[in-house]
Amino acid sequence: MTTKRILVTGAGGQIGTELVTALRSRYGDANVVATDIQPLPAAIREAGPTARLDVTQADALAELVRRCDIDTIYHMAAILSATGEEKPRLAWNVNIGGLYNVLEVARELGVRRIYNPSSIAAFGPETPKVDTPQETVLRPTTMYGVTKVAGEMLGAYYHRRYGLDVRGIRYPGVISSETLPGGGTTDYAVEIFYEAIRHRRYTCFVRADTVLPMIYMPDCIRATLMLMEADAERLIHAAEYNLASLSFSAGELAAAIARHIPDFVCEYRPDFRQQIADSWPQTIDDSAARMEWGWQPEYDLDGMVADMLAKLTPRLAG
Ligand code: SER
View 1 (spheres, rainbow, N blue to C red):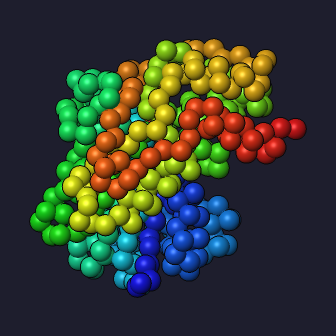
View 2: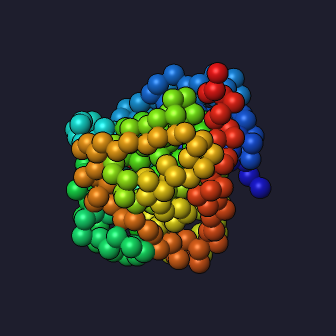
């Protein structure tokens, strides 16, 4: 097997930090270059190569890819949905400008495989909300969603036109214990754990009956690596896989936490993010991912909640 030299953008983000660790243990610390516009955590800096990278700067990206002899890029840098509504121009510039640079540099310098994540935000109010099909209406109402749909299409274009191996998953909201998410609509599903442990109270910014598709980080990382290692011949929908794992309401999540922390109280004060949440599906049909690369989630709601509390409580309590 030839050694893979991997570059990760957005390596300091919620998914990026755990993805870098997983990739390094699989392919070797020295073979995974972690990059971000912000300073990276010490654990990532100390374990392997890192660089500061603004993905909107194509020359800097090209220089790194050339110098480190990169053959695979996991492009995780993005502005998420809530920040995207506050700063639509920034979301466009980073999400579309950054992806365009990654694809162009990959084409010019012979990078073989690109991971280009999409999101449930690619869907919109006209998309069927229950068991959302793989092939369906993609008319998002957020700038983040617009960039995700355009990104899916751009990836497919580079695949068709230049033969670049671009793959991606429409991630549900990601719940994790290591790095906080930032600027997303599904962030409440992570914040609620921190507040429940620290203060026994949380004010949730969506209604209790808001149901969204979610995934726990270990499943999210496993899915990402499974797709990237899948045999290309088996992949029909290479750059836009629906992925299902968990679907629950904010109220059900609060109740699951309260089974461990009985005096936990959750209040609901919806803000502008409610409208974003209401435009997204509740459950996802991921039969293409199951059929084409064998996807199957491991965590259910109670398993995820128990694991989150077991990891966070010793760190936050006291
Ligand atoms: N978690 C993301 C967000 O809320 C969705 O992809 O913006």
